[in-house]
Amino acid sequence: MNKQQVKFNAEIENYTRDWTPEKVAAFRSDFLSWYDEEKRTLPWRINQEPYSVWVSEIMLQQTQVATVIPYYERFLEWFPTVEDLAYAPEDKLLKAWEGLGYYSRVRNMQVAARQVVEDFGGEFPTTAEGLKQLKGIGPYTAGAIASISFKEAAPAVDGNVMRVFSRLFGIDEDIAKPSTLKYFDAVVRHVINPERPGDMNQATMDLGSSICTPTKPQCEECPLQSYCLTYQQGTQANYPVKLKKIKVTHKYYLALAKENTEGLFEMIQRPSEGLLANLWTFPLVEVSESEYNTYHNEWQTSESDDTRLQNESLLTKVQAEMPEVVWQKQPVGEITHVFSHLKWHVLIVYGHQRASVIQETNERQLWLAPDRFKELALPKPQEKINQVLKKARYLD
DNA sequence: AATTCGGGGCT
DNA sequence: AGCCCAGAATT
Image 1 (cartoon, rainbow, N blue to C red):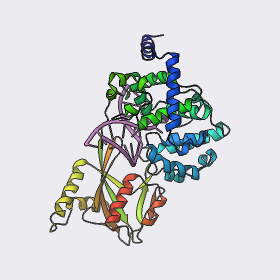
Image 2: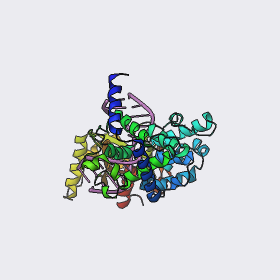
Image 3: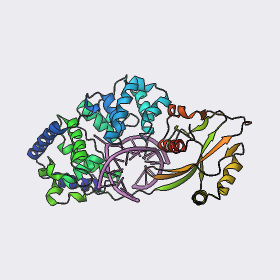
Image 4: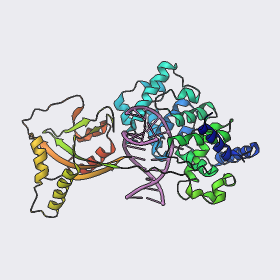
């Protein structure tokens, strides 16, 4: 055993020292009684089938309960069994996930569904270790499914659980660091109820969402008040400790709303890897920040001065690159969209194709009437662009 | 260990 | 305008 392990063991021992078997038993009893009384009725709590539990847990990654519910209901209608999911066409998968974000989740789910059908005889592995072999299932999701569906006393540590347990035990490790997970794993293992592990894990979720909230925790109503170290010290507001802060990069685009003589718009399917993989948008031309600002300023200036309607710089750019399109002289509008680590700024430019042009087409390109946009999986920024165009009556 | 993956809801 | 959320894969 090396130095770090000794230190780790000592810290866990320090956290759990006064958690005697009697205290652990009382904690379990109080916590589960509260859960039995107060638990939320959620669609994925109707049964403990691994397939539906799995679907809910993947959807709930980084996504809030209220957002997930309608997606969950529809997903189980479209893909009632793991076999249905395993061989569904990808456009249907993406449509089912449209607007949920983190689209690789649903692609990974299909990979995992095929693993279940082809490698595991149609049955999910029944342990956390086994479940982790499936694509998209990591430590958290494996623990959640194993505990809920198969009654394994496995921790399921997410941001919620780290918040609750950091306050309960005064764990002041930085939860932004991946290595911190092991502290919570060890402490949860010390108190989890082997008879109702799934309920223990879900009780922690419910407590974290209703009482032990990020700001202003409702400690006066908390069933675990008498067990909570930081409540007794009055320091619960300092937990959890999170140090790292994310930086946002800005990206600038022109979105080309290109309409042909038949009233169809050009749609492009994004690359199969990376951000918004395989979703559909208008053609996007990335421009530099300064270039974008030039177009933007010229647009705003001309709007306040209607004697000058030409946006010379923008017109020069797009007209030169795409002479087969008659570009409107000013942008129709602008949208912005914030992702977790970047922000898009998008100027929307409208143009109609000259009648004589022969349209080139390829695999990842479509010409589509506006009333059929809904057949494609569109990311949020494209939805916003559509709203702007609709409001300006370009999609009638 | 750090970065890359969406989007909504809250204060 | 930040911060948070029932995280995992990739580099």
